[in-house]
Image (cartoon, rainbow, N blue to C red; front, side):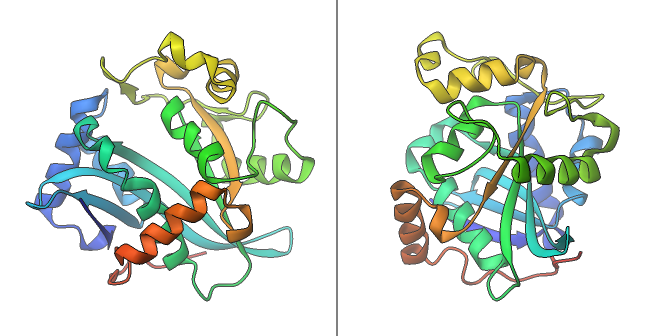
Length: 249
């Protein structure tokens, strides 16, 4: 399995069609037009391809530099993400995604934070696996500074779709996982992180998105996160990234 970072502006028409076809296979309620509009709101796409070059997964993201409360920081907002279940065993997405952020924020000022919204427990589960500190979580309240930053960033990005009281983003036309990936298997609720996600986002099955925040620093990596960084560096997936993604404020 290979990972390739490209600017959204440099995606070919064929790549865009293949991305939509894969996304539509596992998500309901997303028209080609809506998918294209969401894609254009991002500036980078991480493509996962098998040895034959077939698309096995992707993750889109928007990276920008910002000034918040006088602090310079990078802000990563993740977008559409899907990996075909047949490719899950390759475990490429997380190392490549972390390598992507490190590549985009290299030599940039300040820290970099991840504003994540998720309607799926599998995506939420990335947080405790790879990051030591993140919000919200089951075992401690969200620090006041993180809560304020989440509210500001989510309010700016999602406007009236964001409900600060619940920490949930509700889109007028939500993306809903199809059968096979939808819902939370009962056995997974034994995991306190998954159980917390189910409580914090009771509307996840209808596409409600929980707002989360993590600082993407080396100091915040778990042991698994450090191994993912090492794997990404050894693989050299992101080193040839190029294009017109930009880092607009």
